[in-house]
Length: 344
Image 1 (cartoon, rainbow, N blue to C red):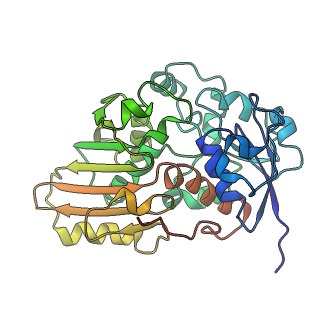
Image 2 (cartoon, rainbow, N blue to C red; image 1 turned 60 degrees about the vertical axis):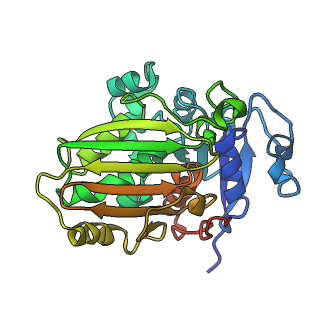
């Protein structure tokens, strides 16, 4: 049955998030990219900012208000930075569906947002109107939503690791999560911590126990029935461009056999398209460029370890956003995403 293409716009399309959205959406069979906004590059062809898209699109960036960008489109993606997205998204017409890729609408409590991001929220009245967009655990609400807050990349990995246990009533007490990320997670603008000569041979922790994704993780675990879980999260910067690797370690009060652990994860992920259970620890290189997240569990009766690998820009960002868009616009969920990572 013929279905007219849906029209989409991207606010703030010049960063890595905008680049990845375009790389996927330009080949999506059900959508047409109608507008791309940028205050810094009005009138500039896309390929001059994203050189990988030369001869792929003739689109140019436009300096448009949110209202102008939303004119005649079905979906707006906001790829604006944390703090900047809230002012633009609040101006979008109610008729237009929207997915926000920043952290501005993930948290439900304005005070928690202030503590996590270091500034007041300018649209606290909207916080309760956004559905949290972790597709595998919230697809029914996402399909009915008009506003979706896309999860953070670390939060995606940590929640994929821990939510099956939370739903099974097996997540309690102290949980240690170590996350490792590539430099693209810090955005396209060069900073001392992401500048290549500073990063290429470095491996270091940053924001231990205070990373802004920690309250996001705790919020969703509590919603899944594990409000007493005490999550300690330490992120690390690694000398790679793409990738998130999560190591979650916990000591259940009631020992769980390895067969029980694997059964819990198989019941959640056995039928999932984009979450793959691995018999061996996962590798970020295997999922690079794809929307897959690879998960491995191991336990020895005393401790349980859950490992997750994903691409921070795809499953941790725009791939998941497109999963959510597909649900919101009535496409099959996997449309435009069914390809593997690269090897090597």
